[in-house]
Every structure is written in structure tokens, then in C-alpha cells.
Image 1 (cartoon, rainbow, N blue to C red):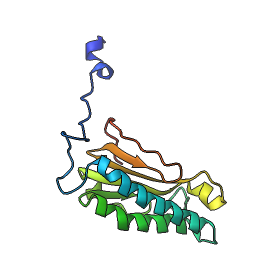
Image 2 (cartoon, rainbow, N blue to C red):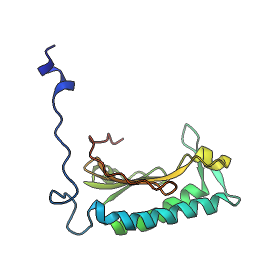
Image 3 (cartoon, one colour):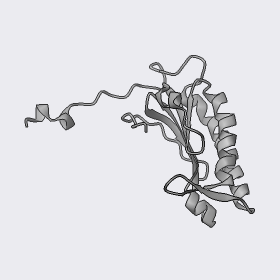
Length: 164
């Protein structure tokens, strides 16, 4: 097959500039750069909540056919983030491992994707290799992501993520 017909060789359309003049965010919410400080504050609180829960006895159980572990920490952090993040991006949908699936969130132009305790097996075993993971995606593309334990900010331009 000639290179011109090979779908892997077709140039991909560049991701829209979501920072600055080409901002696709609603006029009613802040652009990702303006979300940095408030999101960092929320994530620090979420990390502290998870660490505080891990320092005491907590309930744990399994869910689903693969018997994935879930803990009180997962639910506490999920509930905390679900209460706080919508204020930062009111029109954003909510997709979380610990919240019942909302099909409308999967097609929303803007959505929070949350794993309240990423690494629950390590968390319930008392190991330190877990984190709280949050990303804001615009039309399937991550535009901002944050983790509270080792604070790292990413401004991302990427291909759309497949939504399950």
C-alpha cells in the first residue's frame, strides 16, 4: 500500500489550543491556567484526606467481576472531589471509578475524570505507591491533570482519549 493511503501516515489534525485566544472553554469557567491554583488546593486537601484515612482503621471491600478493591478512602476522596471540582468547571461532566456511570458525562464537551485512589491495592496494603488522580478533558483531550503527592502539572495537547 502506498504511504499516501496508509492511515498511519495521514497527518493528524492538531489539537485545538485550549490555552489563550483559541480557548474552547465556556465563558463561565476559567481556562486551565487559571484553574491551576484552585485545583492544586483541592488536590492537596484530597491527598490529606486520603492520608488521614490511611492512618486509621478503615473499611475495605471488593466490587465487580474482577473483585477490584475499594476502600473508605476511595469513597471519602471521591465524595470530597465530587463536591469541590464542579465549582471549578460547572459545566463539566463527572467520570469516576467510584461513582455510578453517567452516560451524559461521556459525551460532555468538558469532563472531570477521577480515580480517587489510583493504586487501591497498595493503599489498602499500607504501601505508599498510590495517588489521587484527576484530569480535566475537553472534547476527549486532556487539558489539565494533577496529582497531590508529588505535585506535577501537565499542560497537554494530545489525541482524543477513547471513552469506554
